[in-house]
Length: 566
Image (cartoon, rainbow, N blue to C red):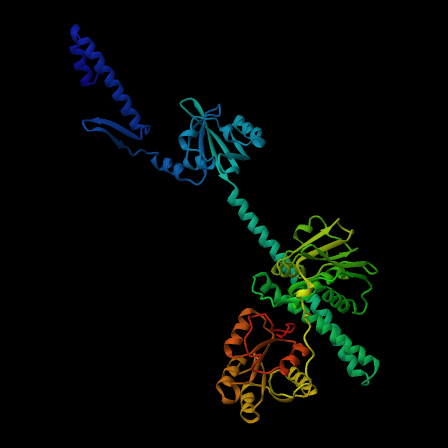
């Protein structure tokens, strides 16, 4: 049945002159009907209308508009391919993955953007027209992108179209990497804590046994002498262990201040080797060869480097093994080498040997391994001195060597870094405030044996009362006191007329930077780390209180192993 317009066209078609116009109108009508049908079916997104002012674009809302927006805005790459592999359509995310403008992607073949190593797999997926696979896309600037490809096939007007979804795997791989790193760090932490417990129990067990020996034997006999030696060595071991634990955070974070001065490296090497090899039951042959070499360094920190390198060699060298310590000059460098015939370092471990908490394989006899902090300290301390340290090994069972290079200075410009001998001790009036009874009693006895007069108190209130009565020259104050803590006591002493000129020494187990700063702010002259080094304490008490009253940078001189200023 004809439409009204078609009926009119039919009536006017009888005249010859109108035939051409009628045919033209019929063609336009067919075109309009086709456009209307396309609009109804959602195949047209917009209309362009010619008007006197130019072209106007009218956007149409179609039923599939939400789905088009979804594809355009999705975080996955999407592309529609012909069976031949030509890209008929892609969204902005796909163009971003291959780092090409959208218009340059459409019309090209998909294999142009597929890396050669995975091209066969992608082509097989396209041939199957359905499935999933891993692949690699190539971007002009982004390089190779690891992706996951998912392909389905749909039929539109009897034409097969391949629908490709591309997932960028980089974020997923990074998440897995972060998880693996966290799991690895957690395992390293657990292993570190287990080794720390082992390292602490060994000296504590030896000290406990030595105390029992002292209780069961007459005074002055050989067993007592040996027990005292055990206690001294094991307390020293515990002190070094705790110092390393406290130092590692400060050294790694760059909070250590070096007290540099000309230092005789040959003498430092011989002193450290003599001290470490003097321990009972070493059973390793240590050879030392030194040239007269001087550096500008922190004596305490260099000793820490030497001790850790030698201890590492001893721990990893079996009984009757050989360790060679060599110091030589090489141009402008002082070259220090520790070489052993021990268990060696595996190729897998060697690149990470200086990383924190990295340990060699552990055995029940503790012949290998450690806390995993000694070599980290070595590297950071050497680097703080402007030097380098490297490790080398031919593999498991073939020994290892550690070589440190430091800047050498002429010996003529150097003077020995050994403290001058102390003058005869001048007795001091010392106020000791410590709540731990055993610690207070031992420190009081030590001070009294050195010739000082000691007034001791178990809390801050009693200590302030003694300040009023006894007028001491020096106060040694534990920070962790009950009631008034050590900081509060120090402030009150500084406010008191009798306490303004006193030497105030903080006594604590905390060696963090914030603890040093808080001590200085409270009025302390020095921050001493437990256990106190007797030689350092004797030096402090022998100096003029006002001359040593200036505060040091945290960690510069304060602590159980810090040197004193000249």
